[in-house]
Amino acid sequence: IDVVMISNLLIMVIIGGYETFVSRMHLENHPDQPEWLSHVNASVLKVKLATAIIGISSIHLLKTFINAANYTEQVLMWQTIIHVVFLLSAMAIAMTDKLMQPPAGRSH
Image 1 (cartoon, one colour):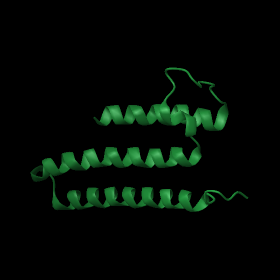
Image 2 (tube, rainbow, N blue to C red; image 1 turned 60 degrees about the horizontal axis):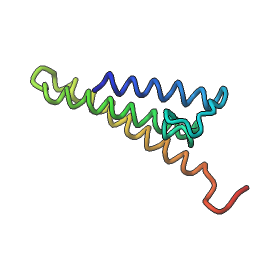
Image 3 (cartoon, helix red, strand yellow; image 1 turned 90 degrees about the vertical axis):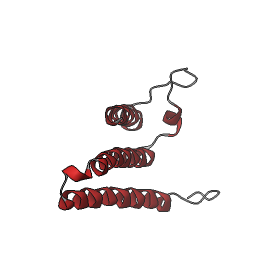
Image 4 (cartoon, helix red, strand yellow; image 1 turned 120 degrees about the horizontal axis):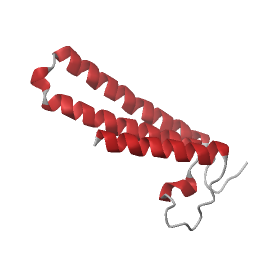
C-alpha cells in the first residue's frame, strides 16, 4: 500500500506541477485525463500532497502499533508525535488556503 500511495503521490506532483507551473497539457475531453487535473492549482496540490503524506504516515504508524512489542516506548511516542505534526501541518495548510481565497460571489 505504501508503494502505491507513493507512486500516486509522485504522479500527482509531477503532472500537477507541470500543468500548474510549466504548461497546459490540453487533455480536455480525453478519456485518460485525471479527474482532479481540471481544477488543479498550487493550493490544491499542497493539500493533496499533505493528505498523501498523512496517509503514508498513518499506514507506517499502524504497522508500528501492530508490532508494538518490537519497539521501545520512546520510538512509539516519537512516531505518534511526528504523525500528529503532519496532521496539524496539513490542517494549517488547508486553513491558510481557505482564508486566502475570496468568499464566493465576491471578486476583487
